[in-house]
Length: 164
Image 1 (tube, rainbow, N blue to C red):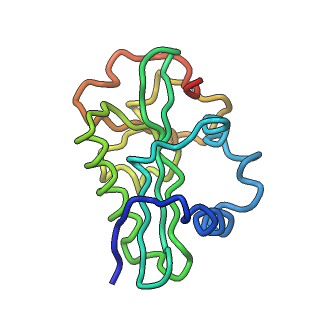
Image 2 (cartoon, rainbow, N blue to C red):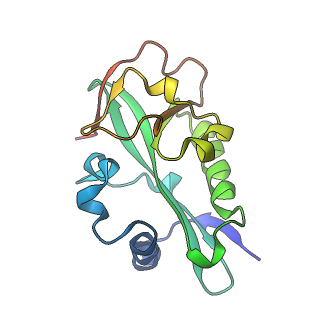
């Protein structure tokens, strides 16, 4: 039986191993989203893991970013599921749980760089990020937004930057 729980400080080494296996040890240098996460801490109230009886098998985190230097927004990621548990829906459970929690906490919108087929069923759409720019280009359709509060991304444009 798996359980969604808040990430704990002692989970960090296991999460890092999970991320290394999922995205590679060079992810800090090669992935655009990490440019938005450098020198910024994830939001602890939106960091969750999926646990088994004696192990951690999935993780999701959210980070604060700004649109055009002023509008707060969330950046989702990474979402990672251990190889042995992929395809079983654990990532989707974490994603649904965390988006619901973000909405309860009053966050208006979430951005993600990821597979559109995976994220679109949760309300993400590339069109919602059309007027936003990242520090480096990404493949078309992979940069997406999701409005937790309807209209929260409407009319916004400009660069997405880390919170200083």
